[in-house]
Amino acid sequence: MGFNHGLSGLNAASKNLDVIGHNISNSNTTGFKSSRTEFNEMVASAMGSSSGSSGIGVSVATVSQQFSQGVISSSTNGLDMAINGDGFFVVQTGSGVAYTRNGAFQLNKSGELVTVNGDNVQGYAIDTETGLRTSVALTNLVFPTGSPIAAKATENVTATINLDARVDHTETPAPARSTYGTSLEVFDEQGMATPLTMYFEKTDANTWTMYDSLDATAEPIGQLTFDSTGKLVGVASYDGTATPPFTPTGGTTLSTTVTSTNPNTPNPGSVNVDIDLSGVTQLGSSFSVARLTQDGYASGELTAVNVGSDGTLMATYSNGVTRAEAQVALAKFTNTQGLVPDGNNNWVTSSDSGPAIYGTAGSGSFGAIQGSALEESNVDLTAQLVNMMTAQRAYQANAQTIKTQDQIFSTLVNLR
Image: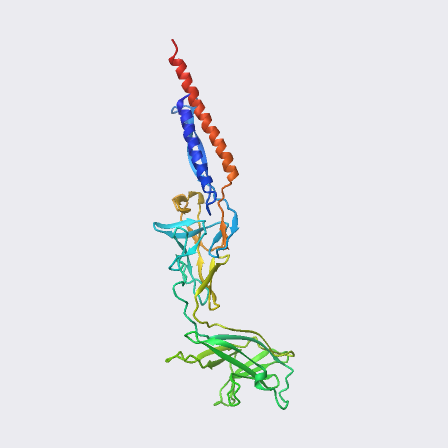
């Protein structure tokens, strides 16, 4: 028995205790992944000899990381995110790109989405009008916190209305124009709200004329025609200089101009609006307005940000607008075990891990993102405490072999 056996065992047990202690100390670290010490037997043998080999102790082969899923717990921060499945968040640190499972994010004073360490979270820019990605290149995710978003002039209005089929246009007197009317606010380029009014008069069988004023001399906007089932089959625009004055539009949309009430000089002028009437019906029930929507808005301040399961960040503003601002990117690797810990709960790539493969949550084999939630450490504290006792016993046993060897040598030295 040599001292080397016990010494190598002490070193290995000490390293094992270091790893276990590191796991235990990070049992409450969000997104932390535990590690495990792997051992190798050490053998001495003469070249070309298959017999007489002697074990000379133990060595630490590697400290392997355990990337099992941690428990996902809810939080009250709408910017917190947890990945359920494969993938890592991508962050830009001061020294380059890194990867993390810690989704405890926040907005800094510049409106950038960052980690608790100040690293910039990476993702994809989104066109706020279409909701589509503008590029596949990763970028810092930034929200307008320093100033309000600009106002947007109304361009489109959608109406879902039922016109009462029981109205008899031949009655005397005919129902007043104001009987079947509604309105909503539209916005000019400065975000000034102006009412758009719509009034309907039944002027023939299955035919209604649409106005934007109660003035008896006002010209109509257009005309709506329905079939025997109450379905809209024709929309015509009005042109008082043409013969006939109503010209089919070939669709279900009428265009009108709303004069802005903006008092500024110069002001944005009139608001040109297309009204989609495809949702208008003529049925035998009372006049009713089911839905009126328009796509303009006043300026607004950011009030909240929430994340979807695909990583889309939906921003809510004080003007009532909710729109997609960006999409969080995820990364995965051919060999996740090859990632190298970089501190601050980050990993970086190595030749063993292979390059990062980027994508979005829920696509391919990428996991889903859960908002207002965090992934807890995957450390099993009970198992780690048991492992610690086992490592302690191993340390004590190896120390005992050294003590025994010392006693044997002392006996030999004391021989007379």
